[in-house]
Length: 64
Length: 391
Image 1: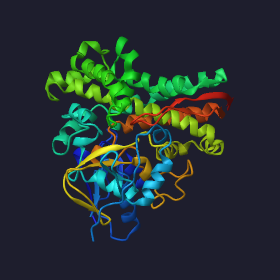
Image 2: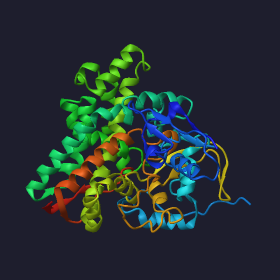
Image 3: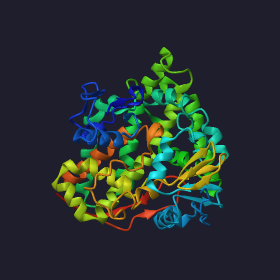
Image 4: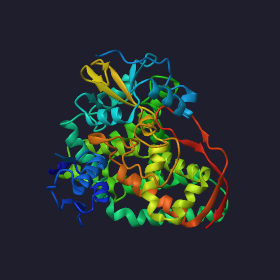
């Protein structure tokens, strides 16, 4: 499964980083960086990615 | 099979419902995910999943009718708040340019220092009225300094901010009385110039951006209007609420005092438990079926954020206040493209206040909070802290 970021919509609230620090982080400029984009279906990483998508307050992340 | 949703003879904006909407929310939520309210001719969305789904679906649930009277919706036309993608996308970017967590990172230390000083001073006094002295004083100072307000505007921020929310209700007496005050705010924002704002402030920066052509001509005043209209009354409400909840639930306050990493979770739980916004409108653009119930195109929906936040289908034991719950997906900031644009600033302010209270106070003993009915923002009007036990 692939994590995608709608970059213009992302405002850097950072809740996704708290939900899935192993997959993404805010860089020094407050821009979101996806460290891992592909996650195996059913894996703990996919669960973390799904949690990150869930908490994004502006719906800028997708997992498909 | 599609059927009409259940109907309830409820006045969502009656004084007693505005002061404590939760029994009404429970009643409506148990009737169904969508309940038609003939008194307002609106379809109330009551359950968590339905609310979140509607907020994400801007094509079906348009923001062109966020208020419950046509005059307010007309006045808001063309703002980020009341528009839909794709136009909304550009307006929102202009609005958040200076308001996103990215833009605000430099302010964190200043805000934390301000909160710490203010709370430390109040704790020393031993007793205080928490709404004027803290819940209002702090956001008013933060926003005034951020935008660079001085003089007359600073003095008017509270009443202008309250009126801007009040007029979003149905055309009742509160709405009618507040239109002239909201009009003062609108008039001021229509004529404000760069020189009226402190050099170096974010507000001044917005005018610089307009002068450079980075944002459309004439949009600076609109942005200032949204900062004042949307960002003051709601933050005041949530800070007042958190102080009252700490006083009412000393065991929960003890948990935050013992573990400051609970500060973000605590604020999310305060927002979930007592939503600052009562009802928020959406225009339904087409016939839409929700759990077998039809909402006709052309009607208006009332999104009951606070009802979704107490939905037992989503939150375990939703009527209990638990600071360790961490309900990051609460609905009080809305969700999706229109999710609260100022939530980064609200978090900075509230986290700073919670952390400062946890550092300086051991126990807050409060009188019963006094609430005054208000169409849109549910806030405490007076909260006497009879005794504060220092940490």
